[in-house]
Length: 335
Picture: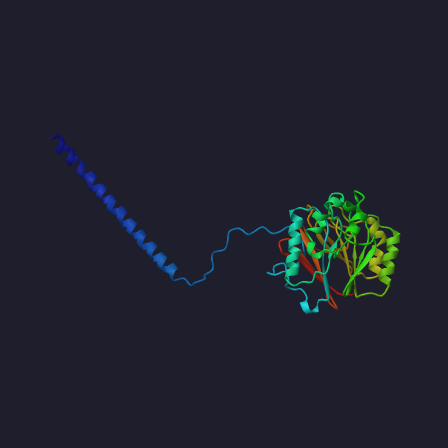
């Protein structure tokens, strides 16, 4: 009797439970039909249909270059002069002599630039070639091994770290270079190396005499402490007073400096281009707003080198990061 009463009472609950199961089965069937339709539609989409855009963009490098030419090009060679027209070429860099990973990265990037068919007739150092104090014990690590491919063709001025320990003369002799100031020539261009650790009137007279004499269409001055810079060290007052008037009056095409560990390019009202190329390997310096300088046309806080290619009528500078990115490019012509 007790079992009979319990079964009659449970009958409605059992019917409700079966109805619930049937409803759930119906919902599952409808969901399966919808999924099958969706899969069929996606299978009909055209091949290569664009993927949805990413929700976050990649970070941009720390650079303030004003529309640097070729910055988005897949190859650093895009925009450079035709190889057949290039008379000579060199690579300039400064503040490199740490022997560390960043220096090696930039040196490898120079090798890739040369392997791509660009002329690199010399490596031009803008100073601070051997950290921390120019010791001869570090010449192999900072000068010889990274640029072994250009042994005998490393032309350099001296920076403050190169002379700190009294070994500036040893470094120049190691590189088979004379005492500063001195000149070197490649086809179509003359490079004038000065010692900005002690800017003086004697070197100003030497510079004036060299620039007044007949020479190739392009002249390039190379010294460490910059004529113009908006960064940690800034412009060099004695250079601006003693040497810049000569550089401007004689319409030098290009001035290459270091000391501030970044890249900056200035163009004076007289058309002289001043470049700080101090990103060869040492720790980088930030940029500052410019005051009382010529117009700063481009700048970047990246490890890099500055390639120079000379044709009969142009001197092209291409600034290449250790990663191979082109940071800036400018085409200069004789004044």
